[in-house]
Image 1 (cartoon, rainbow, N blue to C red):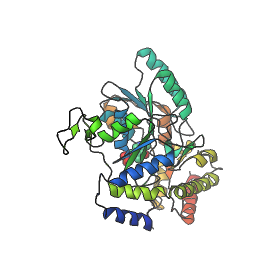
Image 2 (image 1 turned 120 degrees about the vertical axis):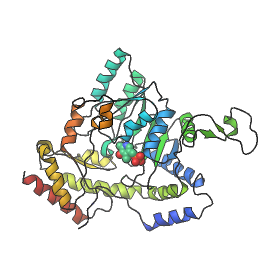
Image 3 (image 1 turned 30 degrees about the vertical axis):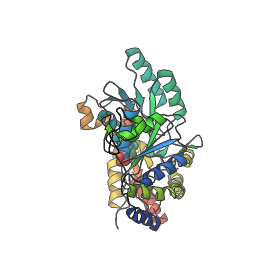
Image 4 (image 1 turned 45 degrees about the horizontal axis):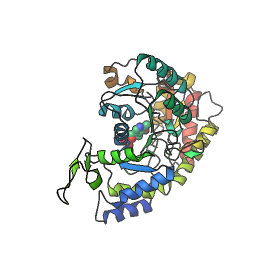
Length: 387
Ligand SMILES: *Cc1c(COP(=O)(O)O)cnc(C)c1O
């Protein structure tokens, strides 16, 4: 039996037709399909502006820069994320620091954030930017984070790579009611895919304009934005050092097609997570609550093994041998050799470290068949019962 992956794209004939259509258009990149995808996604999440880019990693770097992150800034995020959340700050020349997570959601702990902010204020080291990560698709407490942003004067950019299709207080993640911007990923394991790709949404027109210039080398052709007078129709100016972070029209066509089906993708993911949650409710392990599932895009079904944590490797290996592509999200970023070389040490973020030791992500994706779900449920049950 082939391995059931922890997540997987859903590509249908209409997606393939949309890509084929895009390939017959005059522009394969920098064409009109990009703006169409940006408009559809902004409308879906309820944001004013959207900038498509080559990945969420690129999107995080663009957003950090556009909201003023530079060599003298510090950016705070959580250790329980993919390395890209922190790396993007280093690309901007900024310093990175971390805030511990809370048990249950495994998201940023607002109390730990507040404590760290009070200390930072007295040390004169307040962050320029805080980046909450919606782990597995469950939104962070954005209202409380926005309150702290007002009190301590920092910007908020959501790493919403897991959370396209999630809601907070009944509204789509990405509406930016409580943040300056949010960044989505279209990697094949995420809610919708463009192969590789990302999108930044914001309600800030200025920042959106900056991001659109920075994603194409820092070059502008817009007459009203030129510093010098135009020398002719060929004329353009590079006014800042940007990057080449564009998405192609082929990818944007796939994204637009995928976005039409997001309701179905999320509903299927939620149903699988609900089944897992109810099947595992009697086991002494921590799983997402019914309430959190109904507001999450269910990118992951993260299990915390609790007292079984010391046997996590055995459980992981048994599931893999049974053809189940379990995964672990995340090795705390500060424990990576690169970050240890920057001075971070084990023991600094005890909740993230404790979670990592017992973490296991079970397969969730729209086409995971009922009998495959049963196989996952029975294999995990058997594995735990033998410990
Ligand atoms: C996937 C992911 C990213 C990076 O997304 P890419 O599109 O692959 O660059 C960033 N942060 C988190 C939390 C992710 O899961």
